[in-house]
Amino acid sequence: MKAIGFKKSLPITEQDSFIEFEIAKPIPGAQDLLVKIKAVSVNPVDFKIRQNSAVDKILETPKIIGWDAVGIVEAVGEKVSLFKVGDEVFYAGDITRQGSNAEYQIIDERIVGKKPSRLSDAQTAAMPLTALTAWEILFDRMHISDKDKGKSILIIGGAGGVGSVAIQVAKKLAGLQVITTASRPESVEWCKKQGADFVVNHRNLLEEVRNAGFQQVDFIVDFVDVNQYWNAFVELIKPQGRIGSISDPAEPVNLRQLKGKSVSFHWELMFTRAMFQTEDMIGQHHILNKIAELLDDGTLKTTLNETLKGFTAEHFKQAHQMLESGSAIGKIVIEY
Image 1 (cartoon, rainbow, N blue to C red):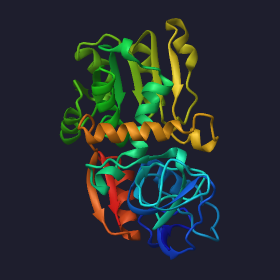
Image 2: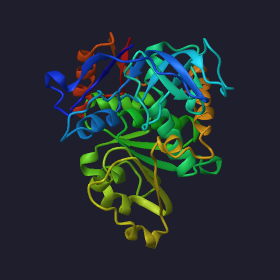
Image 3: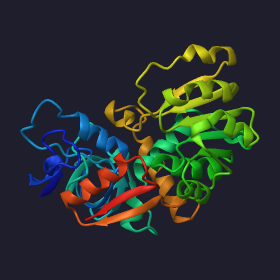
């Protein structure tokens, strides 16, 4: 099969930052599906791993990354019970295994969902990683529930991939008042389209949130940089509030500053369940199936914003350049 990967961590502008190559089609294990991939999307985790996994070495076999895919089940392992050959599926994958930037991929059935029937392949490929992340941080980590309806949430990075879904989930499923950050006219407009009640400029966060009418907020989720906004979070969070983050802080986070208010802090990494084969690993299967239902009935909408047609190294370079610029809105998908 054809795959696209890299042997060395290079700037995306370099010729060999992505290369096309042939590799044997993988064979599914007992609980795996073999999926023929039809479309993938790119996420910040992709370029972070590309930049850092082969800095001082040249890999013998190119590394295949990619953690979002939609495709058709071509073969199943002997213990598979959730899917059959011919099923259309979508998933975000497992960071410890070969990625989705290939014609075929093997994936554990417990982290796979049935593709939404009303969405195209490109519309679907945009959703798994970001929807799982948004769902897990709000419901599994921060334990937001029906009793929190009407409370306020501040979302840092509303126009990004995760932020775009988190706005929808927080507004439509959790019933929260949503304040989110954006600074450019086009990103402000995008956040409003996702359902944000208030869009504030992250460059003066404390003042902007208070000018929007909120002295403090019940929940804060950070999808950008917890260090950059930490002091504002400490000021803005209500006593007994909850803060969640997916970012990779360069400096330690001073949790002691939250003690006086009895505020809780929650990390979210979507790959945790698969990495550690947790007892509730199948939870991602159930979440993805629920997301598919909500996409099909129109409660949630795809965050696809750009589609590149053709499985080529050049398209992956283009997508990574757009992501690395920090100005991408919504999701970028590569359709095979």
